[in-house]
Image (tube, helix red, strand yellow):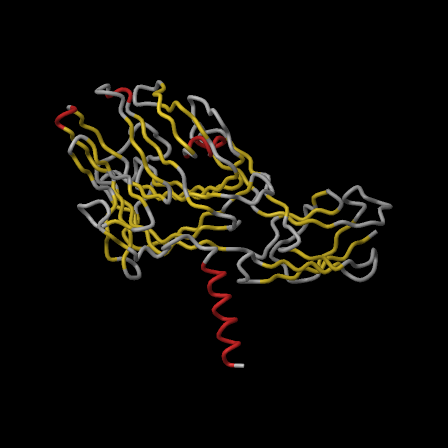
Length: 362
């Protein structure tokens, strides 16, 4: 019995770890940038061009163990007579920079790719400190997004406001078309599934936990995801404008949270406005109030990840949420004007379960 119990515990531990981001406590560092140690499974927005190297991600003592520290930084490349401030950020994808010849106005940059991913978390929790000389003038960004398919484009917005030709695969602005879309056009779009995006102008001298709700555009199960933690105005400013040298972000203990709550409940396709997702008590819904008087066949569905985000143009982008599937939500039918419907919702990672009892009044 003891051996069997050990095997079961190991299986559960591995399954739950697989639903978290790689090295989400930022403890695995190496010398891959050949100057300052770097995270082995994350990428900093470091620059290595024309014989010059600039590091934007550093290892620091953290809230627990080590943490990642990213900072906006002034760049000077004498051979190009280039002086600018570069964005300090880290990502599971690969940050990139491109300059056409010696034309500084052609400068463009972004983040390409991410990691293979099939999970649907509900919240991203991140512990941060935010310091710098101009924290009230520049947003920091905490970003999660997932998608299905492969995006391709060949032109991206540059420093002068025009478009520079450079081919990229799964570039951030090609995936996030609703909130930070590629203004130069997307050659091959993808189906974005989810996004959680938090940005603010604030200073935190001490560790502060930020919880970022993850919203869903559809019911799809993603094939890839990416995460970006940025000290300043990236990804909002794609061509390195509006950045302040020395604005910095400490990041530690990032965690994806999987919920067993329902954001919205519908009866036969009609949203029940009076539903309380946090109640453990029996609730009653009236078919007449829903415009379903006389209906005998009751179908109940639950949805999660609903809300709006303000994109970089100040417009509202609506996320309609996703319908919970049979693996997450089971319904034991009740009777109209009789016993309650019993709805059991399980978090995807098995961390929690919530039971709702709904009486249907005819």
